[in-house]
Amino acid sequence: MLGGWFVDVGSWRVAFSTVVPPALVLLAVAVWRVPDAPVMRRAPPVDWAGAVLATVGLFAVVTGTITIGTGIAPLAVLTAGGAILVWFARHERRTATPMVPPALFGSRAFSGINVLTLLVYGGVAGAFFVLPFNLVQVQGYSSTATGAAFLPFALLVGVLSRRVGGLADRIGTKRLLVGGALVTAAGVASFALSGLGRPYWTTFLAPMVLTVIGMAFTAPPLTTSVLASVKPAEAGVASGVNNTAARLGTLLPVAIIGVVSLHLYERALQQRLSPVVSADIVHALLADRRSLADTTIPARLTADRSVLKPLVDAAFLDGFRGSVLLCAAAVLAGAVIAFATVDVADAASVTDARALSPTCAHVSSGLDATPRTRGCEQCLLSGDTWVHLRVCVACGQVGCCDSSKNRHATQHFWASRHPIVRSLERGEEWRWCYIDEVAV
Image 1 (cartoon, one colour):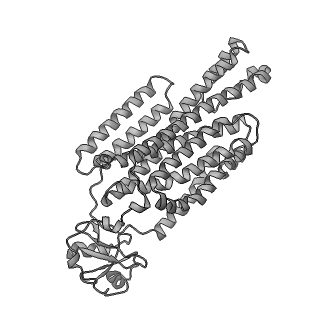
Image 2 (cartoon, one colour; image 1 turned 30 degrees about the horizontal axis):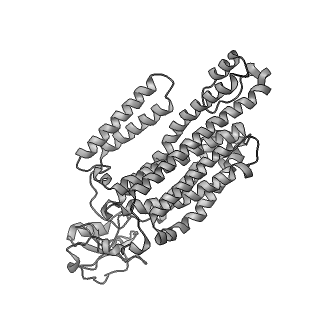
Image 3 (cartoon, helix red, strand yellow; image 1 turned 135 degrees about the vertical axis):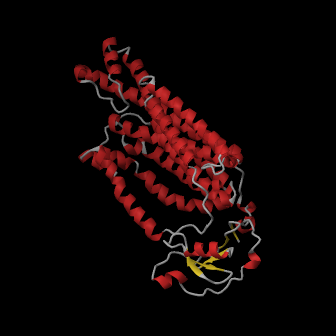
């Protein structure tokens, strides 16, 4: 809403600056308060080749899709991007330390959940991409009012999402994933019912609320389901893959739906204008269609504005309806895939997570020794500060974790080969075997 206000009083370029202050605040909070995870494994080499191939390939695919229809160059870029992504997939299968281990996709549930993520986020992002065009150019909303139209989404997600976890424990994540996706699809599709000139409360509010209810029930169980579909040691990369699917789901529709909406709009415009005005006027309007945002009637046709404006608005609305129905179909396809691939996890059948944890062969060597100090021993000697204390259960030495600049807990492990440490932070009971990289 603040971004919309900046557009009204200044420029859309200024609106983008609103992202910067909260990003800086979050960065400061992360540095100040967020500790590293208690996993202290030796990090494998970074798959720089895979990272470059994935980035370049996705960039080329998105760029080619956005600019398609403007000549032969976009098709060449799109083809090159697809070839690079194939190269990336082959590289991941052959390298010893892949950025995205192909074995992860051997899990049917993991693959299905990521496809669901891509389709659900993609469908909602696509609908929300074309909705402001309708609100501003057809319905006559200001940019500030357009931002306000999305407020129910943010507010209700914040209220509902925190309560979904307990519901998932009672009825299972599969029911939430499938049911939430179905409600989301219904909400996105209901945007197609909007007409011209009616107030927000009777046109766009109900679809917005229905969509947000569906997303509130779908999004939280996605992460739980992804992590449950892989081994504990693969949780980090699995979460990364799922987040990438979500980001792609919000990126690709901007390219795809933009092209589809423009095509549907131009076709509807020609169909509506041809029986009413001369072929010259139809040709003039179609020739000036350079983007979805350009729906103004050219100055040379202002004499015919009273006839053309309702037809142009109706044609745009036709394109909008086709676009949101396509987005709803994508979300519905995600619900079908989730139903077919995700296993039922009822509360009665959920096993204690501790019983599923892997075991190590070094538990007997850990004596739960009494901590020798109340802070990191080496930091106390040097006057440094520490973050997140750990105690060696073999000898009792206290050290600081990887979030601290000196990483004394890790240094002690590699020097002594004592395999097990325990957290000294309040409320944490974990112990970790470094050699086997498992919780014990």
